[in-house]
Length: 116
Image (tube, rainbow, N blue to C red; front, side):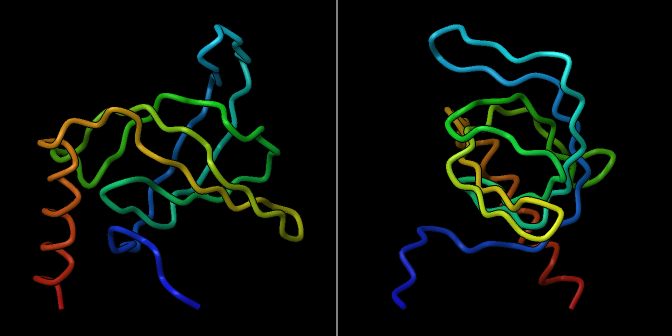
């Protein structure tokens, strides 16, 4: 199978709290309080696992923590969902992420290489 990814996925463990979902047509689903666990990150998005079913094509605000001092805030769009036994795996794209923030993913990748 051909790999069409633009950027390498990097393993990461981050806990996310998803409190509100929204669409561009001002449709909002609030007070949901979903807990999600980010499993990978790239310069274009993240993958995460969650026990709750979340509709595709919705957006949410997130804080991506690499460490106490290295983090950024972003908007993510849910673009893919796979159902597994008892949980779901999601793929999300960063929306309008500034280049200097996406560079933090490069710094994270460099830190992974330094740890080897």
